[in-house]
Image (tube, rainbow, N blue to C red; front, side, top):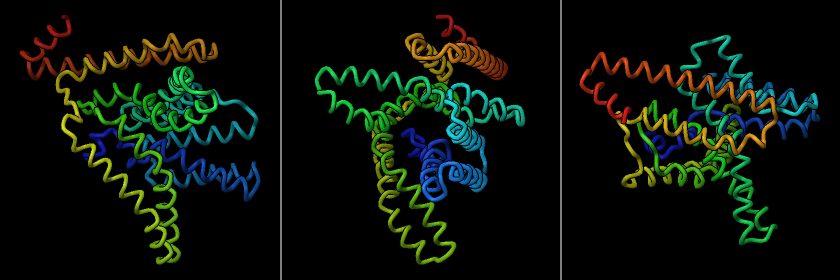
Length: 313
């Protein structure tokens, strides 16, 4: 578990939006072929709800499940889903029923990673196509865009917005995350689907579950060995200590600096919603920083004075 944290791959072993996405896609394709598009979507939504309850219904899982169900609903009623609106709506509904969810680290990471994908994934993909198009033919660029986006650029997009949250809560920065994720992500659908099928089959007939478990084992072993190898690399994790607040603030500023370049790709309603989200994030960050400074001042006056001097500089 520590190796997964040090390599920035904890999302692989924690039930999150990544897992829900695989489950939702698998169920939607399976049941739409068996029962038709509309009935298949209903059964897939029920399957997502069952899976959410089965794995404990943590805040991150509920957020991902609600967003997945909204996507299925939008497809059935013929409405185009606006990602920022859906994400904000899901967060508002969850906060209405449980206001404390806003302080849940899992929810914060899940929300931030989804926001990063919505804001930065498409621009990064377009930038890659433009860059690669200088040296490669258009057909080769199109073939490369899919895997490069899925396993490298999308990971980078999610980390742009999750970095401030991880730095603040965990006080460390993984320098191997951009290497580990592209290597292990391609095999995770096999891990999840074969592992889930082996569990279900084992409930009915144990030997059948054992056979499927053996099929899943190479992918699981590969994932663990790669993560352990990268975690053992010297200098792979940067401990921030007292500097985590400053690094978090700077990473927020760096992420926000790229937003003006994205506004031209967003709808007017999305731009207004994004401005409100940024204002709320700035308020929350300011309140959190003030609380930390106050706690530091009450417990360690000398350290508090030094921290204020560093911030002033």
